[in-house]
Figure 1: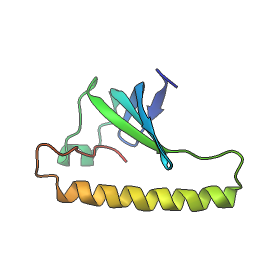
Figure 2: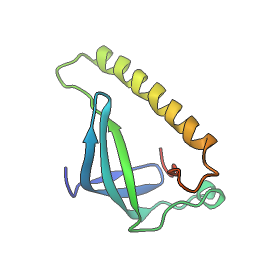
Figure 3: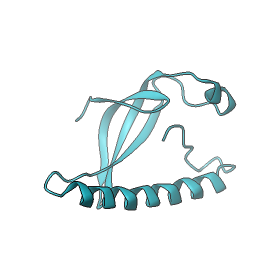
Length: 102
């Protein structure tokens, strides 16, 4: 997976190093390799090309049924929405990570 590119809603990223893995998913250090500029991007500017970012995603299990994976994704989405809400409330602090793409 190292060096692999992944597409977000607003940019394409290159995975540079795995930061960690847990019960819900993985976190990777990545870099922005290209940006999809849109109207909402201008309202809330994002990173420039080559900016380091963190990419997080869920660990789906091939051995589980589609229904089990759907339930798991619901759990992951709830956790991510809680994290996004917390980050948004703290966004005025310079020491808190900004969410650019989700």
